[in-house]
Image 1: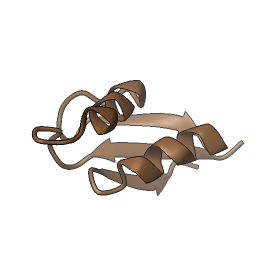
Image 2: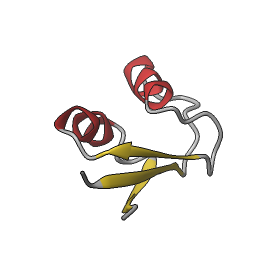
Image 3: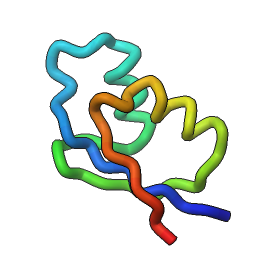
Amino acid sequence: MKKLKITLIKSTIDQKPVHKKNIVSLGLRKINSSRIHNDTPHIRGMIEKVKHLVKVENAD
């Protein structure tokens, strides 16, 4: 299965509560923190909501 490396590049200060919850559920806490997730529709949907706060790369 494909893997995605998701990195938080902007702060969640002054963001909507839904966006903050998506960032936490992706496992991101501090700026420049990264997590590797499987490329699933569920994860893609969360990334789409916060695409202005994260950077997404292939982690193959």
